[in-house]
Image (cartoon, rainbow, N blue to C red; front, side, top):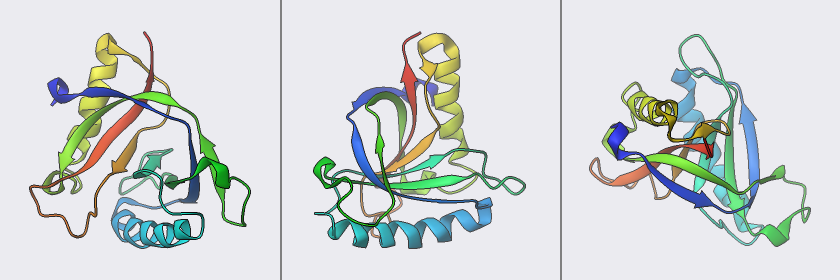
Length: 158
């Protein structure tokens, strides 16, 4: 899977944000509810302006509970326009692997995180931020062979 790692530029984004400490068995249910909640909230700020993403600020497994942050991009001009928690996500370059829905299940998804990490460790770049999952389609409605998610990591030059 290391050979499947690609790179892209991500512009600065204003994101609605929500953080929580969750163990792996709580992650999926919390993401499902919180991402829908944020999508509805984004409508009050002009709608979603890019793919929702989940940042893993710490390990999430049976023994470690993150924290995890859900981010929903909204229009940059909406900053400070309401009470919702929001912040600016800086522009960056990221390395990523694209996954089909069937590949997103835990623990299979860990191979994608490993692939990106190995690609970075192989001297291709320097890690410049926390790893993340980027959801660019309606996950619940997708079929098992549909592309739904990128496992990504911000990178800097070597």
